[in-house]
Length: 372
Image (cartoon, rainbow, N blue to C red; front, side, top):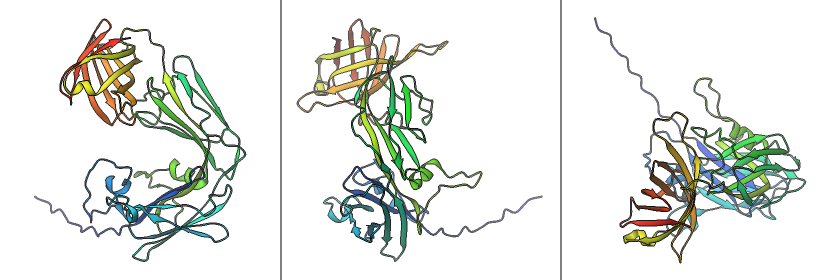
């Protein structure tokens, strides 16, 4: 006996327009991203993400040459300019920037109007929240993860559906909505939105904190997702497209310089005292912390490390690092933009008393760091 497997011809999917735009009352220029859904009709290629070309570098299909405008409540339209039209290197396709005439008005109602070269039309509306009081930079401070806690408070904002709290972290942002007017965070706070539940605050890193009032469109879009089991999807209030046209106002913000107590031999500031080859022009110093001690009962005692590094002058800059130590063996990845997934190079070496010696994976020569 045998069976015959039937065949079904799946029809082509008609691509839809996707829009992402959030009016930000704290910036003078608003950004509207316009692209199409992926249907398989056009090949896409993996590439490194480029902030100047966010749609193409992320594998999207941009909509170019569209007419994009933002219209205020009295009918005054502000026309956007596509980055591609003014770019000298061909980047910025589908990225439209617009300076709203007179600036965004708190509490104001705005319409997004898009017409593509193919005649497709997209419309959407948002009302900008109107806070009683707003501040930027007020949260900037040094934060000792072992002892400190951070209480963030803010005033109520009219026309706000909810309040968004976001803390940048090398393992992904800690991001949630609340209807409260305060939120307390301690040093042991875990990131529920990242795999393996890492701590939110990582010693050695400078972590941005933002509290913002958001409208209903923003709240509903980011609190939902596509669920293949229930059939529920993202809430989108665009007419003629999928995505988001919302608004937000920053209520408070700042940058936390995260530190911790340094009591173990591996912890502290190590300065490069000798280096050969390419290593001599790379890192001048590293500051190391024990991010997490070995797990109880672990067969091999591995300690998680974090910290920061400073590159050699005259173009010295400081960024974060993450690593581990097993016995006297130490390795750490030096990062770009304080992101765990963006590795510049990897150091492997040995700790002998107050001396850390080893080499980099991508550079020639060896380097010796001495604890200060």
